[in-house]
Length: 197
Length: 322
Image (tube, rainbow over all chains, first blue to last red; front, side):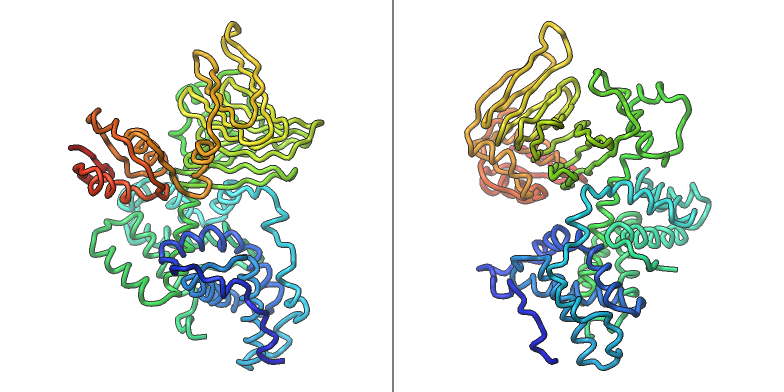
């Protein structure tokens, strides 16, 4: 098993005449890739035993996708994403030799990955508002209060600090935690809680 | 693993701090430059930032829960003041009660979907139908089994309906009810005007307002119905016009002999930065072209460089004058 296990990435040669700008790539990333995050996380969790690696794996996959998109948008973003994920996992097992082979649950499953029907297609009408609300409800009380005042009621950091009777620095920390936790739940709700402690 | 010498989690923390500073702190040009430098430092910075940026924008839809958004009438009908984050179904029900018309009796079995200014969202239904929401739009969907019913509370949506004769797909907007006859159509609601454009199939339109003016009309592809308080009128639009009107689905606005006033009004639907044109002579000038919905600056540039107008930026306002 060597490089040839890599699936050919369809779309790598479909480079548009002018390469996309950063703004275009950002828009594409938000439109095509981020909605797949829940499926990607599920895929990574299913195929990678060490849960603490997953945030790094996701980040590395996104960087590769972003890099590729800057050269031209892949025709089939979803297939491209999962093929990239699969190839990364395989490379990690084969080349880095840091992780024992058992770390990958099932290499055959990886091979079938790009055909696996994923959540984003089968779960219809994902209710983002409901999920956002559920996410908000799960935040620690002070974090939730800061996010509610800032995002929903539209107050500034200083105003929130006054309302909550804490320093602006504390409010900033609550908000940062809130941003990360909300977005983790929104895009990639997973069984393992991640984000700041 | 060169991209993550700094762990993903550490990068994400920094990205979240930038977003917090930008949204809640005193943001100035120096900050903007610093952020730019941080983003340029590594693609992994950019990826982490973009992800949070998109997600945080989406979280903006939570603002539909803001108490202040309930109409005054709704507050009167609510027996008690509800906490800001009461179940959204209740919030939606209360808001619905404030809207007149027998089509819109409130029901707890509804799910609300909303986009913020500049947002766009596709809602896929179990029956294969899908609804694409344009900027600043709110709909409610019946949660009941065997009921295919949607309420358009504000904004604009494009419907692609899987036909099922046994279970008609019903869209209600104010006192207008639309029943699909297997179809693709768009509905846009602003104030008391409702515009329905049929691109495929057929739609039955019924009104429930003044009994003397109530009508039942069957709309065919290419037909556009405009319902206002004074009645319903039907016109036929060219295929290209219909297509242009749906260009928002790909994130662009297409203008063709469009007056500057109309074009500005379109941009203002999608952006917090608002274009202001007060001079009626300028308002009547015509422009053409395709712009991303968020490209207010591009529009301002065309006004300045092509139409030779004066463009003044003042906070969130962009004033165009001679």
